[in-house]
Length: 441
Image (cartoon, rainbow, N blue to C red; front, side, top):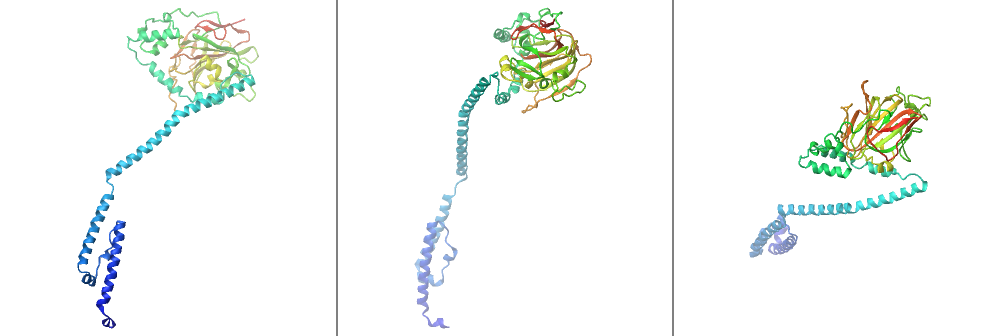
């Protein structure tokens, strides 16, 4: 009731002016921020329209202009999909360039650092060997680095390549170059015509003509292969010399002596005495190592009359068995893959071992067709052996063919003989199949 006595027109006019100023202020702030005007600010009472007159129409036009400008601003600020994809591609390119930059830096300088570290380690180890007056052989670190090389994979690839067929027109050139490089006497071969051999593997394992390698019937032991005498001698305290000054364990080479009535070597017991048949001191254990070079005759024969009883196939590395590596790396023959045949001859214990090497695609044995060497055993080579008991009639005569290498390698003979047995060979001497290795005094 009291409101009727108040002059309404003046009160409403003042309230309308205040409301109009407030709305203008809010519109200005919204225009600067790029936001939509609040809906509550668009409401205007009847008194404001009456007071504002033409200003109301102008305000409506301004509101519509604000709405249009906001929509255009959003359309402009909204990134099209093609632009977003382009930005993502640019970001991926930047990341890839950074990755390639770091990998290129590592590939460029890491080999240099490895070579420098290897050279320092080599010199320090060499100084230690000179100071201690021992043979300069590989350290444990150097042997691990050498064994980590992918030589088995390389040997498998070489075996595949050697088995590939060669066109007949190219054979004289390829085999002729090989013969000149490694001093191959093709006139000794059963087939002297180069065109007869369809692959490198056939040429490596070529047979010889009859009578080219006469067998010495008087010698108790003859050479099983063409090659170079790497080392020979007697075993002492279960150790044998790989080369002069470098020894390896007989037990590591042959494995457990389970074939001797399932007997195990007790601690402090001499392994050489355990495997010998005669333990009265009348015999000794001897060994002879023959290295087959790439140009040699790659087939190997029986050095005497003996009987094979047990076969052990050791899966190991395929390291080079060249004289330089044999002098540098201790225990080389214990690390490499090898096929070992255990048996006996007229003087007692006898073993015949064919040792694998780098680029030897495989080894084949006439008396043991089921044996497969250089098989894929995974990236991590598990060192162990497979054992097979041979038939009772597995007897070999002197000079009989035993097997063949698909590339040069090594033959190791370890045998029991009387104490009056003497070698008539020298280290480094070239020898051929059938030539005598020693005699009995």
